[in-house]
Length: 317
Image (cartoon, rainbow, N blue to C red; front, side, top):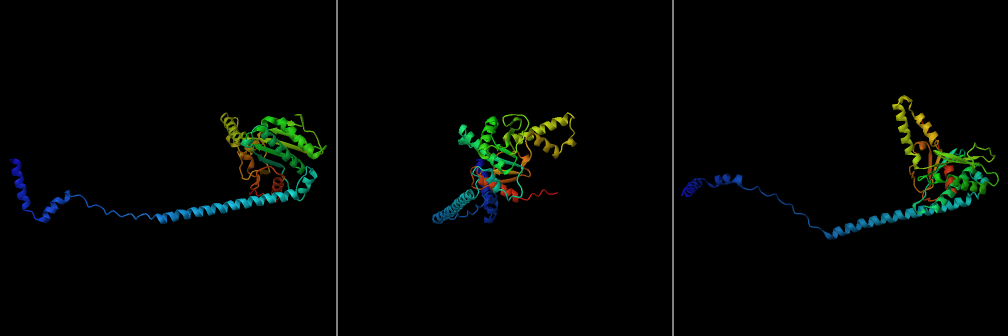
């Protein structure tokens, strides 16, 4: 009964309101107006298909043009190497090597090369090829009158075969020079040097002297880290003042423990890839590489010497 009475009272109150007042009374309880949903344009499959095909066509054309450029460039370099091989070849005669470099104004005193033992050439066959390449480069350097050659091979395999390397290089030098063979010294950082089968002092020879240094990845950044630790420990023990540590000191220590800075670095690969070569020693080194070349060749060696002779060294102030 109470509910019916309250309902009747509410109805009487509502009947007194007009339509506008009723709307105002219910407006706070009404939901908000929905936003207008924009209709997405219908996909046009034909246009999308043509656009995809156009992109594919452009990509294919660019790929073909670049492939043609690479092929023509490789063919050009192959023809150029063949021409150089006909005009300039040593024929295992030091006189011809000296004749090829006769017009050069300067030659590097210290020449360095980066060689790589490929993954598929591991084992004795790869080692023999690596040693033969080192022997050929050594003979070219001796014929050109370059007294210092450093050979970098990332894994350091040749360091385990110093005597064998000396034997192979000596045999190659005999095939080039005959009886007048230059004296040969092969050494590596932290390894005793091997000098013509004896570790005594350097003998005299009218044909000159060739010193070969074998380097690996451990002679690069690891040497800098060890030197930094040593200098830090000496400074902490008050054996060395912090003011005494300078670039000249670091350069002298690295030059004594590893090697001096080479004048010319030759890469026999198609790209400039240093493979962890000691970074401190190549601050001012002239670096040469030949595009599309994938092996040790006399033509690359000769072009590197010509490029070095024309290079201008600007050290600044």
